[in-house]
Image (cartoon, rainbow, N blue to C red; front, side, top):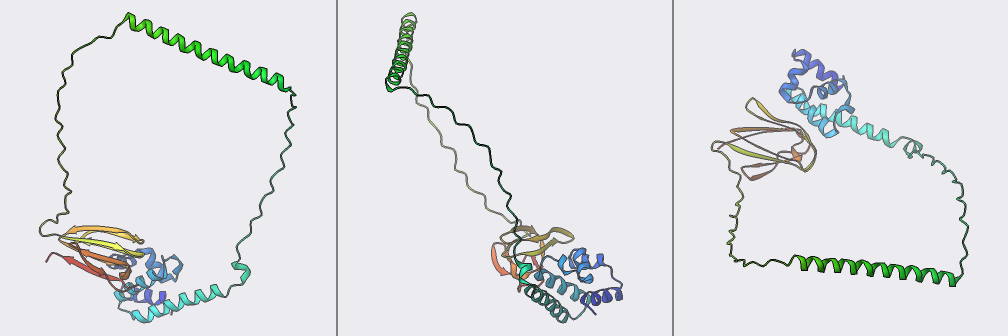
Length: 259
């Protein structure tokens, strides 16, 4: 019998539905069905597959070690099949590059032959015109400004200067994280990819899969944490580091409460 047949037979023997198993193990129903149907490609990774299988087989009371070894042999056989594929199937596909159409030539603009003497005359004529135009504009603005000043002399006034005292704003003191009495603070940091489920009593606080360098923070009277890969999740309780939650690839469950 395959792994899926063994799991399905024991579950049906105990008259338990997939939904009941999912509610108890906190594993998504589609992953449980993938294990029973042997569709391991639907699972996130081999590490998650081993973690889900351990949790599922432990819940059903099966030989977890034997089933896990069978799953490891399956993944090893797939790796050997990939290595045995012909070299041609591993070569990247060559995409032909389309030819660039040849654009028509732009007709050349006929050159205008101007002798050097004529060019000098034109250049100096333009320069003298620009100089005279600039001088005319400057003189016009200056004369107009003088007329306005004589017609409207600037008014004078005694201005009493007053010193204004400036008060410095009060320094902002950053607020420290205060844990309420009777509560516990739990922070989680991932060093690898792991499925995480967090609850407090009957309330689910978080459920999902996180990659590396993710951070979560929870505060409550009792925080229950379940990780699909204990070696990929670090725990901090009330600011105190506790290290990783367990071994790599192992499903780990921890409960943190006020002392």
